[in-house]
Length: 241
Image 1 (cartoon, rainbow, N blue to C red):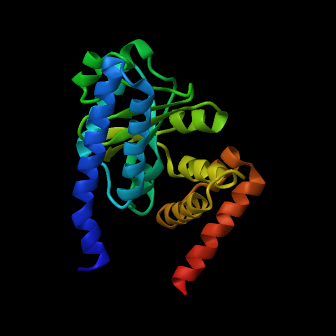
Image 2 (cartoon, helix red, strand yellow):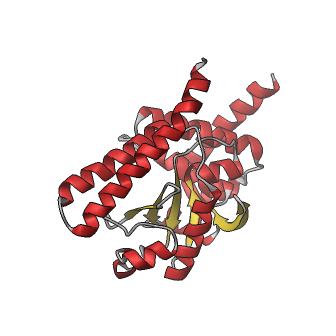
């Protein structure tokens, strides 16, 4: 059996294990017993997901339920991350859905099990104040990142509706996505593997779109924008050659 076939056979088991671990963790959190153990179990389930499902894509139902949830909460959002890269660049695997939001929803709602279950989600277990991770009961997880700087706020404001996995949802523009990837890539604390993925994403977006250089200059500043334009131009030359 090839490695690809072996992996394909393993993925359903990994999903089931991660799903069962999440279910147990949230049952413990609901009962307010062994809270620390439940939180560690929840993190372990997410680690399994991130390590084993990066070559897959989330179920379409996850995005549908997320949109309904955020609409009900009155939260404006725009897709970023791997799903947005798939819209504007090359489709690649991702284990979750990432979205910029204008604000985090009221904890009174996100921590209400009955309200969250209406949309297929577990109640939110924790928040850093700028990032909220919520788990779907069947279909994966979502990370909501508060737009806390001018670039992120512009990304939400200029987002355009696209049909993604059968849902009409706002997605950041190609220029905004490239800018967000560029900022992430330049961070000194960025994991080298993620930095490489950022660069690959930028190139794939640049090859598929006629990016507006003026917009990139406005979002990134001339020096950084020129670096990105040069990176994409090098890739275009290599592809023609």
